[in-house]
Amino acid sequence: MQRLPQLDIIRGFAVLGILLMNIFAFAYPIDYAHSLIWHEAGVSLVDTSLYNLQTLLISGRFLTLFNLLFGISMWLILQQYGQGYLQRRLYWLCLFGLVHGVFLWSGDILLWYALAGLIVLKQGYLQLDSSDLWRKAVRFFAYGLIMPLFYMVYLLWAQTEPLEALTAETLAAQQQLWTGSYLEQLIQNAIYAVLMLIAFALTWYWLMAAIMLFGVSLYKSAWFDTGYSTAMTKTLFWLAFVISSVTVLLDHVSGYGYGLNTALPWEQLAMLLMALSFASVLIHRRDNAWLQRWLAPCGRMAFSLYIGQTLLMVLLFRVIRPDWFASLDRTALLGIASSMILLQLLCCRWYFSHFNQGPLEWCWRVLSKKPATTG
Image (cartoon, rainbow, N blue to C red; front, side, top):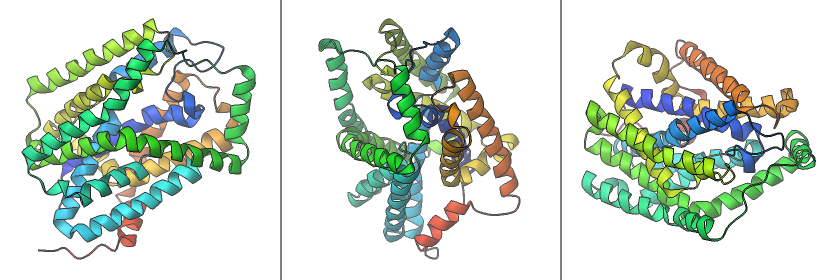
């Protein structure tokens, strides 16, 4: 299968950008991973500003790009190698995701992508034409917003109490949990996976499937060859920015106690619009030598990088420097994430000067018993 440079560039951009949000889930207690208010000492103006910038430019944007490309990859594999091979790949990805989520880190997305992909495949949605895919994606997207809408109404009318900062005693207990007994961590990860399964059934499946289908629809209409016009790209970006500005304002008014940047329904729309604007920019610049030299290799081994990020960050915050867990501010954590991104860029550049495929990509292909090219 001939690789399309724009897809590798976008995928590389996405997998590196994901760490800018995941770093907080690695370094903070899981329930406070996307919360500004998490400890009694309070937060600085710098931390607040960084949190707002993440809401405006980062939160969910890179995962949405990753999700779009996951759907396209499914379609390309189905066309090239058939349903049997794609199905085996998704089954193996379920196993990889389960091991990743339970034995390493509770923030796994691979299991949920694989489950959503299997349902989409079994239902035959990938075979629909571009317009039918788009209509089904819009409907699924609307279904996925139902629970966030209920949550928004609940926040408005139930006068719910905001998430309280951790006391010194509770924070110490969380630090002990996530840097102490591995068995206790496994139990917590397993519990979290069960909760996520419920969330998947109620909301995540519909949103993930919708974005996968949006991606396939755009690919079938040749959008990934042309992107949007410059004017449309800017319109999508600024529309998403304005939508998320409303969330920033509500966060400020409510004292940042409700995690609104991941809860409000319109944020899902903002994530999609800005992700499409990012993709459009990269499509137009796919011939750029720097992007092909540095980002495309990351896209070619995105699976290995995603798992590698978990291994390095879990080792850093739970083994090498457990005193850093739940103790660093957002500036320090974004500095660590940026350093990690630079390291990944350098490693991928070196790796593909010696090898042709990422290590986990190779393992996944072999386990799935990749067939010879058909047709």
